[in-house]
Image (cartoon, rainbow, N blue to C red):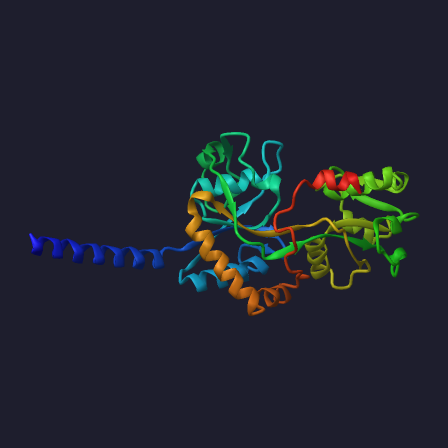
Length: 309
């Protein structure tokens, strides 16, 4: 009987070691948007690039696992949202983490629907594009970057000092309809700027191109989007005002709540990378204006805060 117990103990130890070895060989699968410079870029025939690519590699290295990036493309229909896309990718096992996820209370609540369609992703089949995936519950990592809105100035407004949205009075403003920037500008000081705002259609009108041509004087956009434009147009005449709208969101990883051990390990790796200055260094390498996370880690009701300002 004793010999049998010893044999079972040895078998259990060997099984545990085998499981650890298998986990070490198991790739860390991270989902990244394929066309979101300077955060993440995947173009056929060119090396993968971007801040999130560098960070994912560093995380995988600290976890002792090979990295596998699952590239996806956000859908542009009313049935989709970043929250549902991330949840569907995670719940379908396409990845264990989704990078650069906006950490807001709204984006982390349990989904209002039980299933969602997958966004288009590298390797997707016709059936993948049709089926719906049962959704899980999302859980965030600690944040690793702060993502604010910034005022960008056209050539005719170059040098304009902007310390508040009110300093845009008298300028010809352009904004994309339905965007967060639209809500901010339209609701400021009970609509004081409305008469100077021109609305453009997202993905049809070229907002920053119109600013470049001098058609408008200023806009309010995500800082990373301006970084991407500046990198693609090094001789651009549009400039950063240096002003950041005070309500912004941190970004981090999001996984499934059922995978708490992975989130904990990722948080440890992020803390080490932050302390060593590596995350800020990745920002410089990717031509990204890196701003460290700010409190609160998870942003509350954005729309109420904007309306109340």
